Image 1 (cartoon, rainbow, N blue to C red):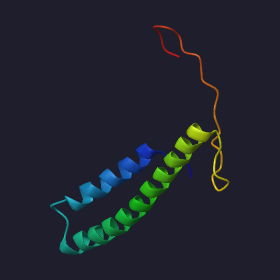
Image 2 (tube, helix red, strand yellow; image 1 turned 60 degrees about the horizontal axis):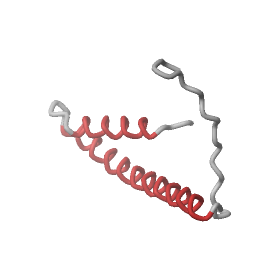
Image 3 (cartoon, helix red, strand yellow; image 1 turned 90 degrees about the vertical axis):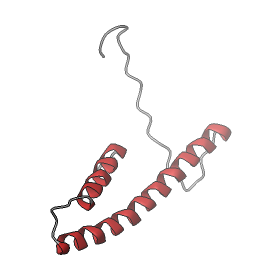
Amino acid sequence: MNTTTQDVRDYLCKALAELADSTATPEEMAQNIERAKATSNVAAQYTNLVKAEIDAIRLMDDTGRLPSSVTAPVMEPARPRLVGGRG
């Protein structure tokens, strides 16, 4: 599974929309609330992971070395872009 931060944003916005659904039955709303609680917990863990990755990148930038517990990112070569065009 290759999830982007935009995918995470989209999922969280969908969860918020479900909570705001005024046509949901009380049972559906109770399910939505429980799902939102679980989603909130997972989102918090995801946020903490991203923060740790950013800290590792900053450390690499400052020292030129990564902690042994962090896998070095795979850097893709930059694609040349056309000046004034698409590319």
